[in-house]
Image (cartoon, rainbow over all chains, first blue to last red):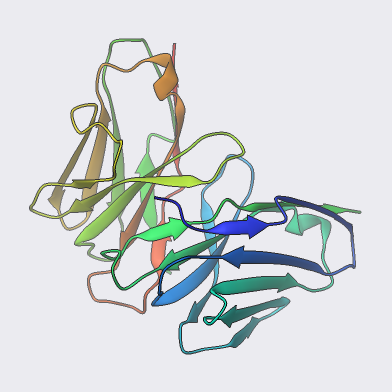
Length: 112
Length: 117
């Protein structure tokens, strides 16, 4: 079953602005991962944050994790038109047999 | 980095025929592979977990006889859509977990577009 919920479902911003996407989940997790998908293409792994971590950075990406609220956020700073894509969170839980359960995704559009 | 290859990337088949999609881990061994299905502008829905040397574990609501999964080796899993119908048209994506356990990262294939006409 799909457990992740993301908001917003769609986000449109101007180049240079920051984009924030949120993800909520329901069960206890081992880690949470963020992926990017360009239209009609496969998934690109962006960042993994473990359950004992609260914040992680990678380039222009910043991910936070609040296990008490069962939520995570992905911040893309100084966005570029090339960041236009769908972004998904996925949870890897201890009781899920190693499978990833994906959120509904946020469709990000960055206008030049 | 680790690579997972899917083949074919696009396939068109006639209603009633079967089509096979392959998922290969190219530079690592994967005891477990996962098959997902994705409809346009929707999220990935897990269909089944493919275990090397044993039967696949299917998610609730996924027809086992419709979507046959075989994981015959540590680098190859196949998904066969049997007696395909137009409603089976979708984007199918596989992923693989490194047996050697390089962190908890899952590696995804590029996906396969199936169109049933």
